[in-house]
Every structure is written in structure tokens, then in C-alpha cells.
Amino acid sequence: MLRKSFEKFLFCAMIVVMKVEIVRMRRKTMVLKVEDSKHAVLKVPTNISDRKISEFLESKKNWLDKVQKRLSSDDNFAQGFDFWRFIYLNGEKFADVHDFCLDFDGQSKEKQLRTIKKCYLSYFSKLEELTGQIALKTGLKFKEIKPVESVRVWGSFNSKGIMKLNWKLLILPERLAVYVICHELCHSLHMNHKPQFWADLGKICPNFKTLKKELSHYGFVLKNWLNMI
Image (cartoon, rainbow, N blue to C red; front, side):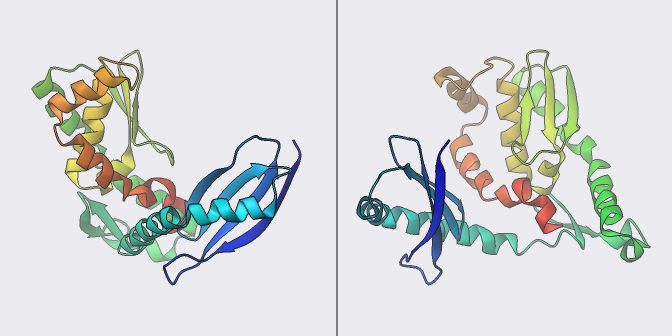
């Protein structure tokens, strides 16, 4: 694949500048993807002119500005969490890591990370109990729950009835963990995301759209865990 890239700066209405990396490649259309609050990637056809690229970026300026504001807000929200020092449960500080490990400061970063994860996994039974309660209330079935760590998804459900829940759900407010669990339990009825899936999810979790949007603000817990701790 022929590929050539360079950087272009796009000045939005905000004080912060978003840097847009332009990648020329064999494709027919332009596609713009925001990576974070300061960086976006624009993939363009190999022979497209700089003028058309500038016009396209200008047409997306307001949209980029809105996205950047939202991501910057999420970045500020993320700064309120200190995963090196505190264990968080249900969206709030639960305990100091030193309460679980007296020699925490004397450990290597790798061992500290294992200690922190071990702390969270010791509370995974809370998610198991919550899942059992929701399953009992809704009548939806599952066979087994397994804790997992992922930077992509909060949970999954397979055709064998095995539900995998990201242990990082423990960090979130319980209402968001409930949404994720309801979502995965609905896969016991539909192994897809077709309209009927969302209709059935709405029956057991009427405000799922609001919760889904709120969950997106915790993407830093899901994706940037290693960078943050």
C-alpha cells in the first residue's frame, strides 16, 4: 500500500490546537478519525490536492471543535483519579492502596501494578453478585462469569452462556456496571445488535441510552489504564 503522511495543524475555536495527521493512501474517499483531544488522523486519496484537503478540514472544523471540547472535558475528569494511590469502587475512593500493602512504596512499578489489580480482583464477587441479582430479576440466563482485563470492551457474552466482565467495571458507578451487565445478559436472547436487541435491552434498562453515553466518559479507565497507573 502506497502511504505518505505529514502533519497539518488545524486551529479550532478552542485555545488548544488539534494536530491533524494527513495520510495519503490508495483509497477513493477522505475519512477523518479523532484519536484524542489533541490528535486526529485524516486518510486521503494519494492524488488529492492540498486545496481539497484544506476545504474538507474547514468543513469539519465545527465538528472537530465539539469533539475536542468533549474529549478535553473527559481528560479533565480523568485527572481526578489517582490509581497509584487509591482503590476506587462504585465511582468513589474506597481505600488507600497502602491499606492493602504496607510495603507498597518499596515495590517495583510492575509489582505495584500487580498489587493494585489483585486488590480489585478481590472484589470481583461484587460484580458476580450484582449479575446474579439482575439475572434473577429479569429472568435472563447465564452459565458462568469470568473476570477479564481488556482495553477494548467492558464485557462479552458467548453462545455457551459464558459472560466475561472487565474487572475495571468495579471502578465505575454501579449504575454503569448495571447497564453493562444488562447489555451482556441481553445477548442471551440475541447474539447481535439488531433492533430487537436494543428493544429488549430497553425493557430491562429503560434509560440505557443515557447510561451508554455516560459510560463513554469513562473510556480513560478502559483504554488508558496502563498509562495512568
